[in-house]
Amino acid sequence: MSQAASRAPRIPTDKRALVAVDLGAESCRVSLLRWHGDTPEVTLVHRFANGPVERGDGLHWPLRTIEDGIDDGLRRSADLAPEGIRSIAVDGWAVDYVRVDANNNPLDAPFCYRDERTIAAQQQLHTKISPERLHEITGIQLARLNTLYQLYADNAADLPPGARWLNLPEYMLTRWGAAPFAEYTNATHTGMIDLATRDWSRAIFAAAGLDLHRAAKLTQPGTRLGRLSKFSGPLADLPALRDTELIAPACHDTASAIAGIPTDAKQWAYISSGTWSLIGALLSTPCNSPAALADDFTNLGAIGNRICFHKAVNGMWLLKQCMDAWEAAGTSFTIDDLVRRASLESEPSALLDVGDPELGLVGNMPSRINAQLRTHGHDTLDESPVGAVRMAALIFHSLAAAYARALEELRRYTGVQPTEIVVVGGGCRNDLLCRLTAERTGLPVRRGAPESSTIGNLAVQLAALEGGSPAEPDAFAAAVSSWAATLLHAESASTTPAPTPVCNVATS
Image 1 (cartoon, rainbow, N blue to C red):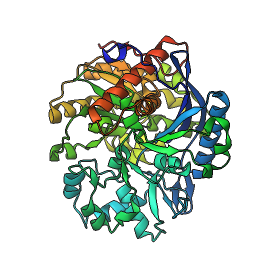
Image 2: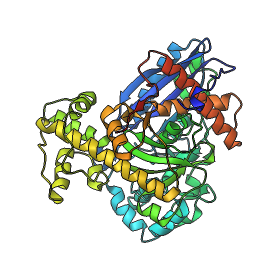
Image 3: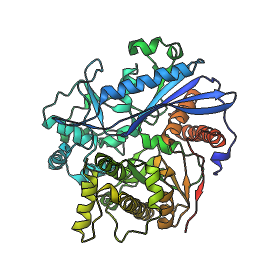
């Protein structure tokens, strides 16, 4: 365990409960932090499935279902916390947004970033402002899912622009009473933040024909946003929620997940492993070279004015899409069962290019995988449930190889020489993937919390509530790390199944 993780636990001055909401592309979670004496306990109060829904005009998120599910989780939390709930914060996936009217009511359910409308939008926008210029300004990966291309697609389709647009975590906090805001770590994923000024880029807004006034005011993680409003309806009448603060965490779930890794080590890399796999390291200054752009690295906001410099590749999305196809064919699998059985398979003779855009689309994943294998002259696999284990093994081996390539690129562009890799997110439970990653990279793999975004979310709340200020970034980052260590120490000493304690995976 690192020096930071072993420091003395902290105790808050106010031991009322805290709520962390994590919006996920496959499931949404509401977690409750309570104190038993001086010992914290984090409980998953409510989890419900999430996923995009195809409509006539494209792929959308079920906004009303998400709202109702999160509100239900808050009611359950209030029932479990007679001492009262001190604060609430929301993190989630980036880039997707809700267009709202002047009263912050949604105009429609938000599009899903996987909707194919942005293919044409990206191509068209690049005729108005070049990819090279966009990267020079923003320092981020020019993925077609970025908010910039989605907003440009909105204009092309003549959709009502609304008074403003709000990314999903910020929208949730606004509907409970916060003034409209755009949290910085989440805003960096839009493709519209100037890396040098750390503000909205007027040049990008102008080139895309977007109204800068429809973008909300930028806010740093750790900002206290006010109290849950009486306009939040029945929630505000619950005794436990009558004096509850709303706090902006690192609203992007990856930034929250990295904030949930307490360490003083200078040379370490992270893999945030979930629907997507993000491989990178924390930097004090951006790395914005043309070569980094060519290899799809990105500079995104992190706690304490630092940079999450990482590369995004497909993650457990590949397996989940395959599992959906096999279930539709009449056979259901659990991830644990597939991992266990895939660990007995021999190494595949060929690996997938997990970055192939075709593997990022919805549906027919086994056939998409076979199409890639066939294109490169490799033998195809059985697409039916009979071939599930071999296909799962292919996915895990391919992901580990992609992680190793990304780590080598990271070394080349930044000079960072990691001595270990910390894996957070659901993928840290995957024994086979962790072992393959250690073997491919030659580095020890340390497991963080599966729900590291929850730990980071809560740690930011505690740092803000206990006197920390985002205006002092170094001190605030240190306070967040200290609170994360306190929460992880308590979890690793408890018998609760999640988050799991830190452990090591031996290298070959």
